[in-house]
Amino acid sequence: MGTLWIGVIGTSVIAYALKLSGHSVPEKFLSHPLIKRINLLIPIALLSALVAVQSVTTKSAIVLDHRLAGVGVAITSLLFKAPFPIVVLSAAITSACVYNFF
Amino acid sequence: MSRVSSPTFRDSLSVSFTVGAYGVAFGAAAVANGFSVLQSCLLSLLTFSGASQFAVIGVIGAGGGALSGITTASLLGIRNGLYGVLMAPILKVRGAKRLVAAHITIDESTGVSLSQESRGLQAMREGFWLTGFGVFIFWNLFTLAGALGARAMGDPSAWGLDAAVPAAFLGLVWPRLKSSTDKYLAVVAATFAIITTAFLPAGLPIIGTAVIAIIAGLRSAK
Image (cartoon, rainbow over all chains, first blue to last red; front, top):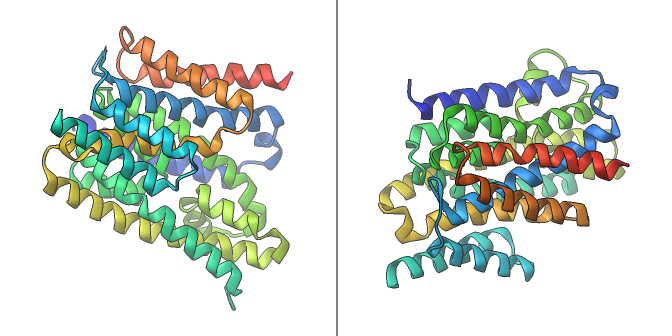
């Protein structure tokens, strides 16, 4: 079985197990303030890391290319409080223009 | 679920459609990262948690192993477990209903439900079920549309898809950056991931930032 299929099935099984476990554990166990605090911070760290890696790296090298232009525009549109579809579209259009015309 | 109060219905439907439409970005990104249309759709049907889905395709697409992808996705899925802790005493369901409730326990269903508190327990339950099923339907339909669309396009870079993926992540994380700790953590995690990409195996630079988050949590709790 290939990496992609293992990824699809493994992620799905664990995702459901995590959801179901929440409906099954005693409330006081997971409602500790420190656990809640860390639970809010982990997605921030992981998502920020994903943004960075997908914007400026290719395999194990730092590569500054059309993607960075797109993400730069995404950051700008977020600073102007643009809605999600505009953020994604403006990034895609910018990146595609740089890729195709430069 | 007898009579559905209309403000709750409206809230649920608008959230369902807006969030579900992001499924286009996911379907397109999954195909751009090498996943088949079937695999993209199965991720949306079975994992059904946006951030986790983007993570597994992002990590594996960047050359990471299955284990790195699954671990990153699962760390992002922990919060759904916490939502379950919040929702269980509100829903009070058993058996098959509980198994279904678990699957649709995500950011949006929990968020809408909790936002209905002033309208009473019944509205909270309706908000959860309507939003959970609503997002499920739209998210899966739009994933299929995005995956098919991306496959028809050819070179993902020519359409800006390789920038749309990090932009989508950015759109997910941006509203979470409230306190100065949040913003500082985002910058440190991004920097750490970029620097360590040069020498750590693919996937680890991303998972490693969970440790930074734990340290930040312990420090800010003092």
